[in-house]
Length: 360
Image (cartoon, rainbow, N blue to C red; front, top):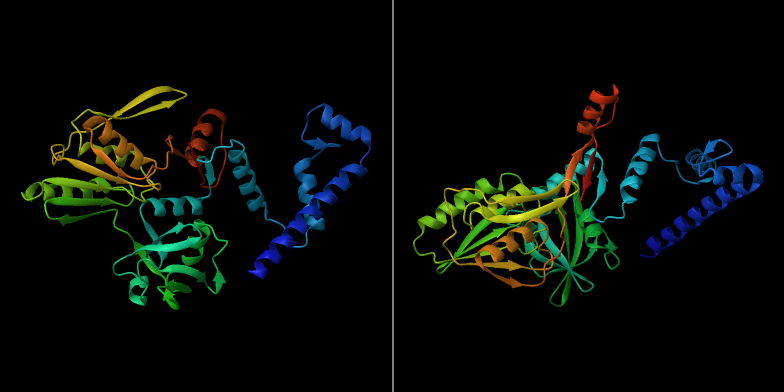
């Protein structure tokens, strides 16, 4: 941890040094040139763009390796979207977009656990069946205290997940606290595919758990709906949407359709182009006649909130648990290759890398 703090201090020193040299460069220019650039509101000084001045200063003064042209471009694109000051809008490179898709579809390379931050502690909520974590001996309620020999005390949840995940067959060392002792585990990472939807019967109740609204979820839902209808002992359904961060809106509409009358209002979208009403579809194995209880928590977000709200508003089904995340916006993926194709038809030819932008 001391090394991490020291590194942060050094980084701050380098940034301050860079800014100092940049300001010194500007200060040494003739005042007439500086004032001209400011007066005309141009992003240049003495005919040289501020971007080029900044990159030149970094090249000459920054101690570590300078960014590549591709890294600079990526930074610019991320900066443009960041200027929207919208937490749900971001620019994604091709690799980041692939990670995003894997997240929705619950595919990744890691050890197979679900955890959450409770106060200052990272607590394991679930160890997936057949996972490396289960084989190694990790258990529910274990508290993660170190990863790869480094304390997680100052980690965010995203930082911890990133450090635990890694290439298939690589090793990760975890230290956990269980009851009254510390335990260490060396675990080989593997490809993990979490079931998007599962069912489990308790007496006369069918528990349906959805972990994410990923691709082809509704196909699996149809199988579960059919099994539920064929089991005459089932009198009630519990729909568990806890820790479900959402996913594909169309799959949210499809899942809602199993519990609603056909053509019910699921969600109303408002955009620059006006208002759009999205309604439930006709399904063969409808569960609309069952009483449903929906389990939610603070991590129930996006498509999960849409489903929960639609079932409550249309059928007065009961929501049980904690206040949901409260996202309130629908995100859309824009492939810049498609945008470029449209520009080509209007303005001639152009070339771009395959990149994506996620907008709220």
